[in-house]
Image 1 (cartoon, rainbow, N blue to C red):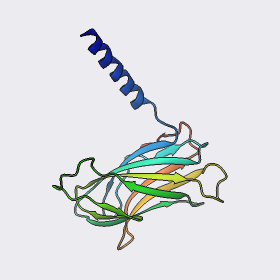
Image 2: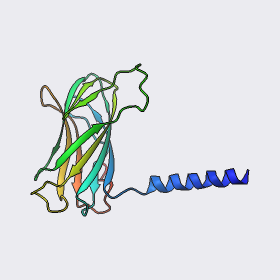
Image 3: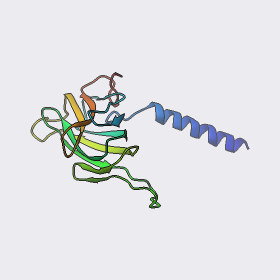
Length: 167
């Protein structure tokens, strides 16, 4: 029993440490997707230094909007980026899931929840090492170009790998 209790205490301590400490080159943002522009609960801030970063953006689609959303990273000078959409580890075929085709998330419907993994890299000529300044992860209606969600991204912020100020 003592061995199990020690193992459990160690697992809890490791989990708490992992939840408290973040890699300086990754961050998470939460928001909602809706016609006219959803809101992010907070932006993200990255520390300067690395030239590659990862942003995980989770969002829920609010009714009545449905359709396809184009992803972009807005800011100047431009960043190189790529995105991946998380899928369930086991798909029993009971639910339909949106799919990512290039820079468009297809088949979004009300109450869908997505987790979008975005890799950000300094541009080949724009930044010798790391980006600085203000950027935005934007989701726009693929048909109309109307805003669906915008997540502020700051580079060169103190603390890094964390949330920017809460609105």
